[in-house]
Image (cartoon, rainbow, N blue to C red; front, side, top):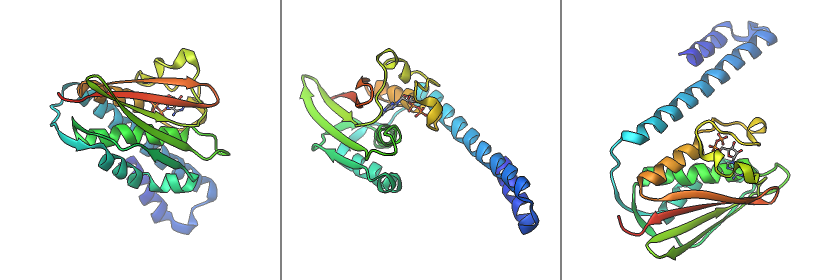
Length: 204
Ligand code: ADP
């Protein structure tokens, strides 16, 4: 509502609006949109603890294709290169798996310095009863003392102040994987990149 009224006010006043007032209105719309995105993520994070999750056979190659289509604009703008092993079919939820990969890939692009082209490698292997999937980037990396903390809600890590976000993406990602019987962790060499390691059960 706040964003809509700010837009209406902008339209009603039209070209008569002085530049300072126009910039205030722009700030109101931007803040309202960020507040909306934050609330939406918080609701989703909360719902993930009790919501029933419908499971089916999910082809992760299709998931990845969907995610690259969703992120097409950002991939194009940054000249990102994504390289992936053939991925398995898992017993999961397609919508949630799209969200997992979309969070990881959009972070990989976002946390790569602007003067470097993002290069994302997705590797998959079988390890006993689980599939192990690695998502590696050539971004800014994560200091050792933050490797666990970044999965907590609202923890934005050392990079938080320079990049926009809510600090909920990885908390949501971990909660999804836990609900699906999987895990997620990260390894990193600061300055050189990060590798997020996911496991998903072969059968559940
Ligand atoms: P947000 O991206 O909104 O800050 P996330 O929960 O997705 O929230 O990530 C939390 C923090 O983890 C980020 O603020 C950043 O410091 C760190 N992070 C996440 N992904 C990466 C990555 N691929 N490379 C470097 N740092 C990352």
